Image 1 (cartoon, rainbow, N blue to C red):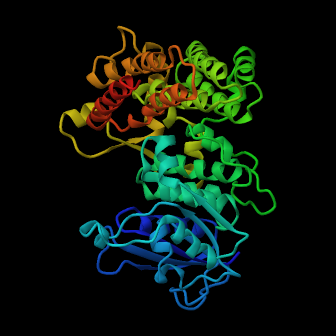
Image 2: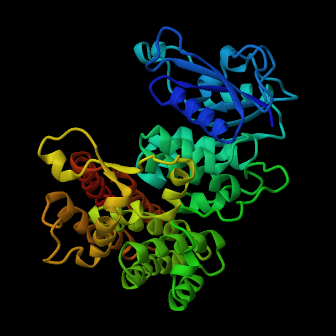
Image 3: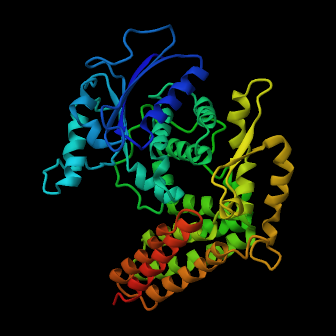
Length: 467
């Protein structure tokens, strides 16, 4: 289908690159693409507007959209989307919107904090008034991606995933993932963010649970024309989870969730990933820990699951850290290879772009390209080496960051037990939940991660002083 798209965002956050990825995907699908990027005089941290025309039959006039010509507004930043430039192509009877609720203060506000600025609600209402009331999808994209993946860098691609899944952006998921691969930057991160966006559109409660967030109030779900569902063959990051779990683990999840489908979905996802990460024994210990705090919560506040959900997300995040074995496993995931293989032409070479910690420590600043065909056996062997994780035979386990990563789950559980010990009121539960959510502080790799670990421990120490 032909579609005119206006993309709005902040310079330096990948707005133009995201538009190029969408255009590449459309071309891979056989469409014609025209585009125009309007970055003004201040690209970095300034407003950026990009227009795309995707057509099946040749060019359609100017590359820049005229007034009320947009079929879709992709709003990566709410402030820019609500501006005159963002909305001049919108029409309340024609334009659908898929966007992030992020608002980046402009330079004037940064330099002069006293400058008045519309509230997020006012900005949202402004965009809603100029777009179709039956096709509006808004997500806390940065917060969700940060909670799910440890970094908000994939927020724009998350929004694109929502747009593709709702059918408002007429490119196939296969082509979009192939375009991400061809772009060659943060391929794994962007592919995962795209899939999470698709899943948010198909099952918002599932994604909120995976991010450790409370379920959305009734009636607050994203509007899905025709009740869109995840297409056949697509899977949530992590794959066919019930197929990985043995009957005993599945029964424990059902019993622990006590009919709460959101908590059950979260536990199923995290437990299956821990089986992949290490083994079923680790998943069992994980469920034991979650059950411990779920019981405290039910005793104090029967029917509540907020603490259990927060512990489930936080403990998983600290347990399934990305060491060398886990990276090798993820590189071998078939879903990560299919789009690149489909897009490749005869004679093309597929390669993994990696920056191993050892080379980084030696001062090597660039990624290295490892041809997938030649290095696949090495990666397969490395992935199987997960059995050595944390043992005296683990060749990677002696580094400082790996030692610290192994300590975090026990420190986290000790802090949770201290907070939950003798809990009798909902205020006690709130303190325990704050401890559980502190796991989100830990993110990044190497030096960045070491800094976040120090911040995490400081946060736990502060919470330990809470009466």
